[in-house]
Image 1 (cartoon, one colour):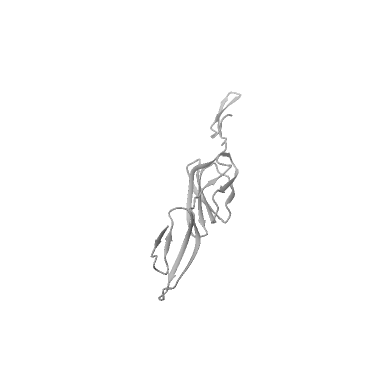
Image 2: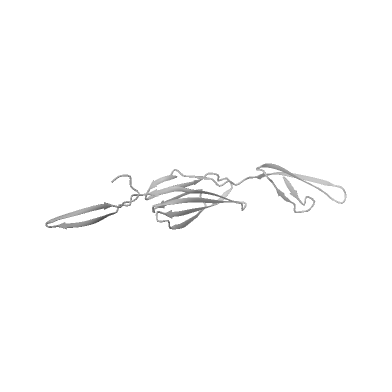
Amino acid sequence: LKISNPHESQAMISASKAGNYLLELTVQNNFGCTGSTSLYIEAYELDALFSSPNAGEQCKPAIVNLNSENNEYINSYTWNLHETNFQGVKSSTTFNTLEPNLETLLNEIADYDVELIIGSTHGCMDTAKVEDYINLISPRPYFTVTEKMVCDTLELELNDESKFIDDF
C-alpha cells in the first residue's frame, strides 16, 4: 500500500496489487491522549473477459450469446460489435446493459470484432476486444445465362458465380 499525505486529515491510499489490507488510524490530541481504529479494505483488479458458445463460423442468421466472465463489483457492460461485411463495409453496434450476458441476432454475412467494456461500482473500467470473433457465413447463389439460338434449338449456358459455397 502507498499512503500519500499520511499526516493530513484526507490521506490518499493506493494499492499496486489486489488483496485485503488492514488500515489503522491512530490520532493524538494536545494532551497526549491517543485513540485508534482499524478496518479492512479490499483492493481489486478489473479484468474484462468474455466468452461465447457462438465464437467462430456461424450460419446466417445467428442468435449470438456473449457472456462476461469476471462480474464481481461490475455494474455496467458495454458490448461493441464491429462488423465488416463481405464487401468490406464497416459498421458498429453498441449495446449498454446492466446484465453480464447479451443475446443478439446477427443477420449479415460479416466478420465481427467483439469488444466488452466493463464498469465497476467504484468507477473503474476495463476493456477486452477480440478481432474476428464471430464469422457469419451463408452461400450467395448467383448465376448468369448466355442464350444461343441456333435455328430451332435454344442453347443456354449457365455460369455459376455463387460465393461462399463448397459445392453446387
